[in-house]
Image (cartoon, rainbow, N blue to C red; front, side):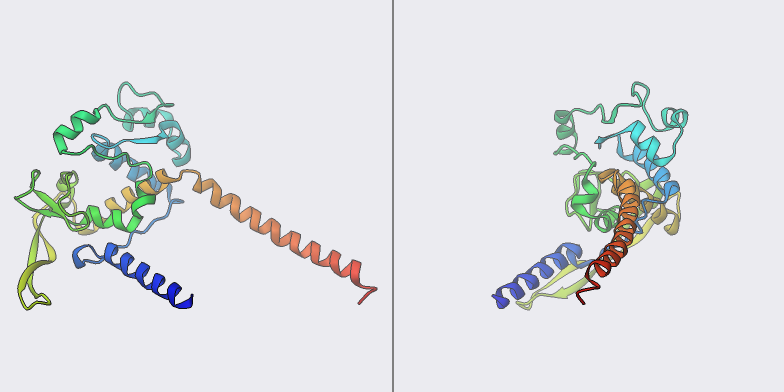
Length: 247
């Protein structure tokens, strides 16, 4: 039984390592802090301006986002909503699924719970590792998602990266070229730190969208733990009082 559990843990760790190192490349580490409302506001702006042309967040309502992130309704309507949207609407898009499949080969997924299914670090790595690949329909590929169907919508901010290859030897003695790292070929409007901060804000926002209630849940959780600690002291003192004559 112990051997079975050990093998299971080893296999699980191996699979996690394999998924975390797409094509042998490490994951970037996202600095997620959903209590940082300024970061979430910037992430919401990036999401609306660059992602919502194709991706929806159908489980999130505009007014819920505005209330949670401290965005006034006038700012919400003028900057984060499209002309026909109402504050109580969900963050859906006009693009039809059939049209999306014609454009991209597959319909872009809803991103409401993408951060929960993929993980914040994976998302951060995904946005960081687009590179030029002239063989792909949109001219780009991705280290985290091989043969990705999505164009690099943030290319104006990051610029265009090119792959730098190295030769490795396979077990059978043959050699093949693999991507060693990416280099910036054409600069974008942001420097490296600025782009990483923008991506981190976007990932932070997607983590919030995946579970908006976690902001309240965590604050309530602290209160509950403090309550239980106080209750523990009271119960312990009562126990001592009830049992003092017996002991």
